Length: 184
Image (cartoon, rainbow, N blue to C red; front, side, top):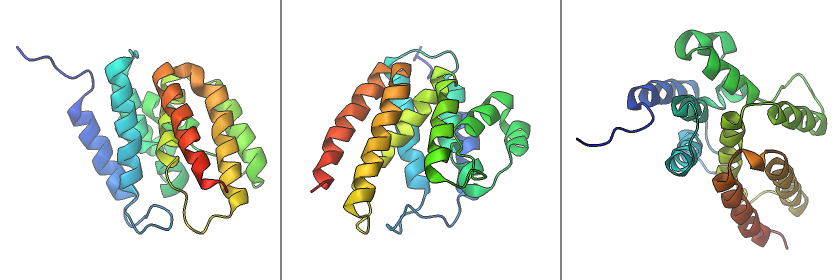
């Protein structure tokens, strides 16, 4: 008998359809590509991770990867996520969401990383997967200072959360080395 996957395709599909509707019309910054592409990349990183490292609740990780931006970028309420996906997923996505009420970007980032440091390793791993996905060629309009700042914040994320997954930590280190090519 064939081996079953460790995560549920039905839960994946439910979350993916929800994310597709929530992010409808959104584009990856300055590319014109559907935002769902980013969601897919993050989820791919998590699924690859689950092939090499064991986690208690793979479905939680996959669903949080798919839904990680719906509170922050699509104005979905945490209570709505809890109704549809359960308390664990809602809490995970909430932890992965920056608090826009903090207006200063640096303070918002510090609060966000501090909060994620106290999160379960599964949620920290989703954040690592998110940043790995974002460490591709920066938008053409970014100034060198912004590229350098993004790389520095990536280093902070890797230093603070890298312990959650050696696999993703190593992937992120490689992606950061590759990203340095965009600095003059």
